[in-house]
Length: 434
Image (cartoon, rainbow, N blue to C red; front, side, top):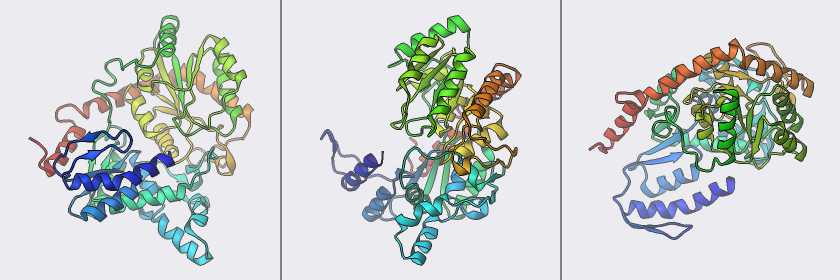
């Protein structure tokens, strides 16, 4: 991923220079030539695109506004990029530079230590239950990348841009979005909340089954045998993966033992699935394992009833917009805060606590005092309790709440809906509405 981001940064400046001059532009990969168009009146950049922001400023200065595209939960973004007065970690770049100067080292050498430091401080962020600072790190990482430098770059983009697009939605986090809007308006930044961003008819019509193949066959079979809302979909996204494989094994064994049908997707390059586990799933008759899955199709299939997820923003949005409650297994970034919000504020999820790892992951949570025991046996007890809860009154309650949010998300893009109006306001500002 980092290599791809580097490649895009290298080719961006030349492409933007051509666009700004109303010249044709050539694809850096396929060499396809695209006809010239009028120069841009605004630029929308991902919050990870600091090199592109700097290149844009160098070419067109402040004459062309830059909008930051922010995917994630508003409360989590407040924590990562907001001021300390709002429960944020503040200017992490300034903190890193100050400590690097004091110690006579490079920012890269000290960055991770600064970012990962926790001391049990109680953090209160808009829209979230109070959390100890270590609760934002419930898992050991399966990879070694300079997260501090990434967060530092995103912080700069957020503070240097002229406005922000939020891919979140008022349907499920109005308090944090209002706080974010007030904070950004203090520095005269426009904010447009335009989530959910999903295909037309999502949640009301079947999604494309392209590439579903055996998965569609399995889901159709489960629908006939078990009825609707019976299947659990499991995915940790395309990057994250548990660092204790035995915990994954225990969850799968519990599902097989409880005869709870599931589709298990392991797309992460760090995924480790043993031949024994794969064979156990195959022979169970109630499970399917795959390295890739059409997530939107699965979540909208009538057989699917639950989603065990790392709590990435897109996964949460796609699940709730389909009326599917969640089982949360968060790792880092915006995920831990999102999991807490889903369980405590929205009551649409059950968070797994015993799967936590590492020194920080085994410490008690502020909201309930629970601390993971750090054993496979404890994971086994918890997941079996969760399975029973999903099949009982607790599961019914979570599903009703998820269905309520689904309806609100659907309304956001109807005529007069809040997200539709926000996008219209942006277009009006740039005379793009005809």
